[in-house]
Image (tube, rainbow, N blue to C red; front, side):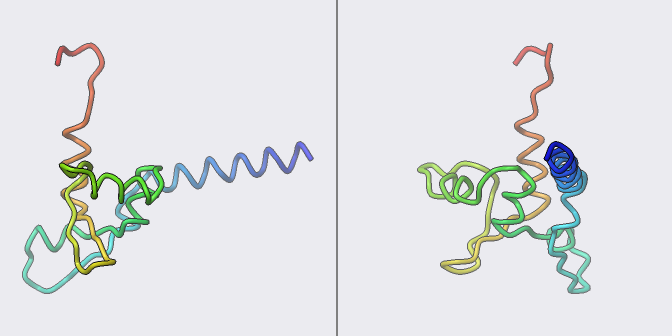
Length: 104
């Protein structure tokens, strides 16, 4: 029993490390030949971004529907489809960065 717990725990950590290591693996790249950085940066679905941020998809939905909206910028493709630009997400994360020891 203890051996299976260790193996499960180790696998869980490896999965988390893999998800955190590179958001690019979950990005849906759009290549239209225009070389636009906006399009070349890639896109994330709500579930992809939730996995990258280690939050539930419902958290992203709550952020989007808050007034005023919270969280990273998003694009409503349709009533049910929301996409996030990887570039916007990276910029949003950088804006939330806290460096210990620095005054705000």
